[in-house]
Length: 115
Length: 111
Image (cartoon, rainbow over all chains, first blue to last red; front, side, top):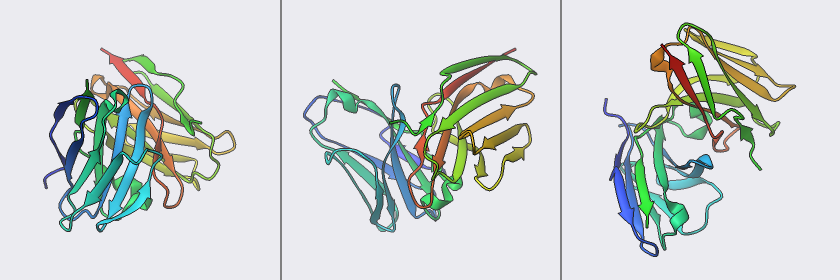
């Protein structure tokens, strides 16, 4: 069974630009969560989508948004990039969503660098 | 305010000895706790979890202990192996709320 895939793996952007990251969950998984990992803050929850609906949202500004498609693939978008957005963005999928957190499977992440 | 704290950024242990990684939390509503392991260039991998109704859960070389009164949990790895060298994240949640992660502890197992 294929794992969680994320594209692209690496991305370099400049301040003010926008970026779209993609996540393909494990086949059959309906929940996709996004996290931001930075050296100073660890992993921080961005949002979770379940059956194309945002079910939970973390404490991030509105520049961070996401969506989920009918095939459970998810995208996250960051507009008006800032230097502080440089981070590893991780996507995790699970069958039933956050109450079953022990079955979250993470992708390898997208490393975003904002210059 | 950081709800899940891993106060040791790094830990070095000799191969064959016990590794003890600690985690403290402040939110008394947390009822499920997890440990994840992360190698460089890979996403975190689920290791072991414990519900708040238990005080110990064991899986092979890995044991997690929960002390609810102290709001403290620990992960014991016995015996430690070089392949255990990674960053370990403690995480917690309650009900349908998102996972809250600690900042991680880098474990180095020295052969």
